[in-house]
Image: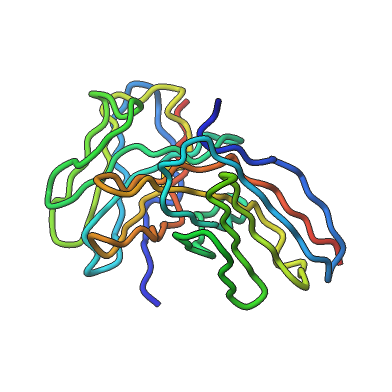
Amino acid sequence: EPEVTQTPSHQVTQMGQEVILRCVPISNHLYFYWYRQILGQKVEFLVSFYNNEISEKSEIFDDQFSVERPDGSNFTLKIRSTKLEDSAMYFCASIPGQGSHEQYFGPGTRLTVT
Amino acid sequence: QKEVEQDPGPLSVPEGAIVSLNCTYSNSAFQYFMWYRQYSRKGPELLMYTYSSGNKEDGRFTAQVDKSSKYISLFIRDSQPSDSATYLCAMVYGGATNKLIFGTGTLLAVQP
């Protein structure tokens, strides 16, 4: 069964460093998402991406964040200058296309900022 | 008032019990409702998806939506220790946005 994959599973970085989290959505899916989950808190929407551009973003998704689909398979989330409060699980999700609402999530990347 | 409210638990039940998990929401604009299961430090796994009031059954799982009361439920029959996880409800407004709004999740422990 096709699935969303994410790398790395765990990333440790120092405050102020840039990190890139990678996702490979299910092939033939068209809409892509990033969510985050701070330990003990609920899953929160960050950004949605369709047709090579951001379709929606949350207040959390400020200028320090960016997303890119550099090729036909990868979908990346970049945090330019990490802060301690960026420590969280980051999940990528995808859906097939317009009219579908069932989002399929990857296993997540645990980001630890020290 | 939070958009989506969910009792965090923990909820502990004996194996074989019927489990009832619930969420309430405040905005009647929500159109689509989902239940996800999340094991510790893993990604949410889609269990059920509904978009209308009423019941939907899939194996041991039944999802129930009552739009008039802004209340959704997930029932698990014949619960197993492997059902022990956090159960997240999630909702979508529909229209131009597909972002999921999650509840906090209910931690379920099924005791053998």
